[in-house]
Amino acid sequence: MILTLCLLLPALSPSSQEICSAPGALPAPTLYLSQTSAQQGGSVHLQCSVITQASATRIVFCKDGEKISSQRGSEKKVTYGYDHTVSSGSSGNYACGYEIKNSDKRVIKSQLSRAKHLSVTRELGLDLKLLLGITIPAVVILAVVLYLLGKKVAASLPRDQRERVQRDTSNTHEDDIHYASVDWLGSTRDPPPQTEEMLTYADIALQQDRCH
Image (cartoon, rainbow, N blue to C red; front, side):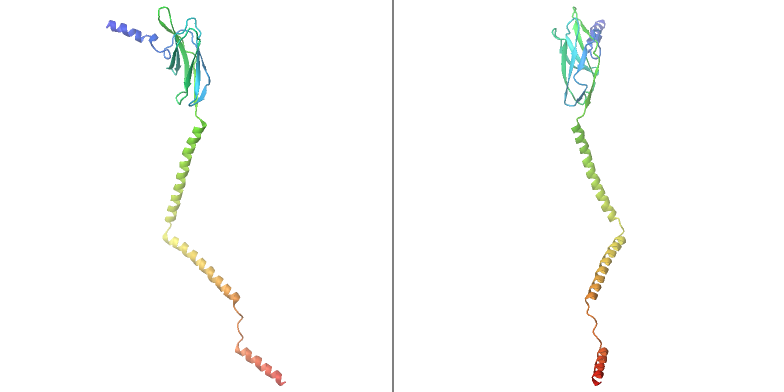
């Protein structure tokens, strides 16, 4: 059992854990972001500046305490870059750290850089398409509902009420035609002929004039 504990201790030591969750004591590097707000599908350049007496053997980029990328260190470099493709889950806090090995080949970790926050914005075109995709079907559904309600209201009227409305409408049209026919006939009718009595009186008066 003692031998087993001795084998597990190195694995449980802080130096065996990832630097993003268990940083060390070396001076922290400096992290730069090309932009702090980006759209989905874009790219953000992260740059970690490492200034130390010993050359870094490994550079690690972190997001919210999790490793997202790592690079091997070089004696000729003090800055290390990483191009991050922006997605819907890219919003968060970013940092970087480094590791070196001492003369005993022991890994020593640095502190993490000051975190930089990246915000992800949505494209205007996507928002507009989403809005149209919701609005147009809603308008169509509303129009169909109103049409069906109108037909239902018309069908729900009592039968005698519908017949009365139709009868009043038909009577109004017949009365208009009847009165128009009477007026037209009255305006074209000839004056009444003279009666026989009026003609007899006229004949007698004519004969009396001839006698005188």
